[in-house]
Length: 238
Image 1 (cartoon, helix red, strand yellow):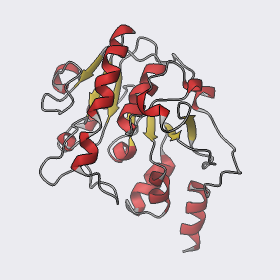
Image 2 (cartoon, rainbow, N blue to C red):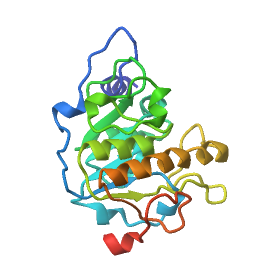
Image 3 (cartoon, rainbow, N blue to C red):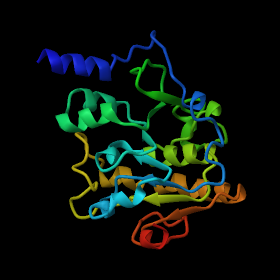
Image 4 (cartoon, rainbow, N blue to C red):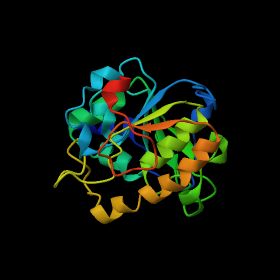
């Protein structure tokens, strides 16, 4: 029990607004670090249940939430403040928490409100405030990220700030598969179909903005409910 408690203290510090000791991602991975390089963003959609994650080895990757269960992303990214708490309390399982501790890549949280974060986590702030960031697509991390009310959108904005081009989307299904919400066992609080149905509107708004910036975004799922980006099969790219 004592070993577990020590481990959890290393992983997580209580989020207290008055304690803001931050490690910013741009200090170790500046804007445009991936200029002109391909990037793969791995979402949670159930279409990835049989995906060969080993194909991503050696690629620049942003793994959203639990993608690290299958491989070690360049960046493990989340905007849900509950994610760290669920990790701390081992609600995803003890081995998942241990994997999170051992990751070789960057652990990154979008800071949607003033808070302190564990020392092993890098942060990027939200653009202006949570409400205004719903409809935002920024060019620099210091401007904060737009989020479209979902980590997939915020990760796309991060990839754009890093200069990635093209950007490939995996697991951006925007729909359930029967009763399956994710390729993994999901989160303690499940996203409803009504919640997911609100996400595409933000991508629909961002798509022409990215096109103007000549950033190519390709959705690697022909069956995806997200239709604003051109589609390919992942096997054509990997």
